[in-house]
Amino acid sequence: MKIIFLVVGKTNDEYLKQGIALYENRIKHYLSFETIVIPELRNTKKMTTEMQKEAEGILIEKYVNNADFSVLLDENGKEYNSTTFSKFIENKMIAGSKNMLFIVGGPYGFSTRIYDLVKTQISLSQMTFSHQMVRLFFVEQLYRAMTIIKGEPYHHQ
Image (cartoon, rainbow, N blue to C red; front, top):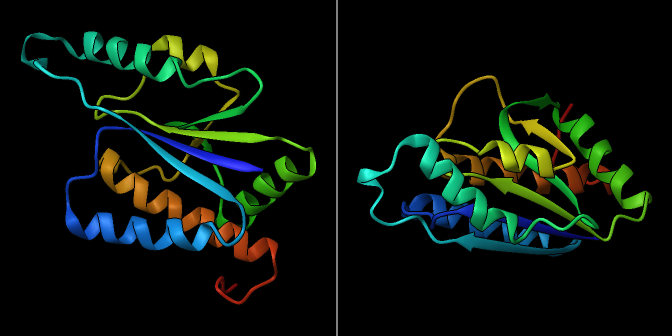
């Protein structure tokens, strides 16, 4: 199975870039993994929040394929602990899902058109995090899930 991590805008802070790269490299020992960065919108000062979400939605929509299992990382999604998230991933692997697409939107979230396209939504926490920090949290949790699936000692219960 291949996991595609689709994000809007580049990661700006060096400490986040380093952490994300660390876990992306670790994940690649377990499965195929690719990050796709959609460029941030330009000239947004004259755009409302809804206009920005719609414009980003058009860009995101180009990557959403019905054959893939697509997941929004969204504050209103289903919450998992690390063990149940690993089971979620493992079940998709067993089911023969070819690709899983995890999507992080811009700072204002997603347009309604994107909610209608995806299979499910996952929340990493009830707390709100910047869309840049969510990237690090997600790749760490994906790496943790892979070590749980493989029975490796990274995760402590």
